[in-house]
Figure 1 (cartoon, helix red, strand yellow):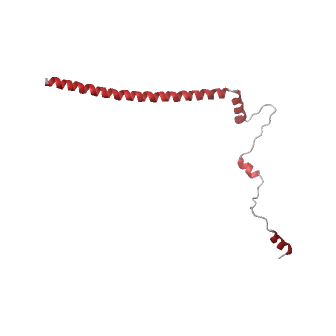
Figure 2: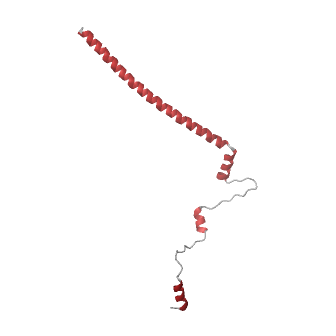
Length: 117
């Protein structure tokens, strides 16, 4: 009788431990599944962005813009204007003297200057 109780408790404890381990595995698998689903969603969004970019790159407007910007070419009849770097423009631009923000002389002072006082 005692052996049967011991065996029963041993089996019950073994089942409880097994059940506990399985719960841990299930939670780990759920966590991994959620991570993978998030990764798949992110990759799908990236794929959509790349497809959109590919369509943009294939367009004639994009190709024309790249030809104009990168190669400096123009359509027939157009004139290409190349501006110097900002440093050169600053050197070539006329110097603007900064004026002080002062009030004009009051009238009484002007009269003193007029009469030489």
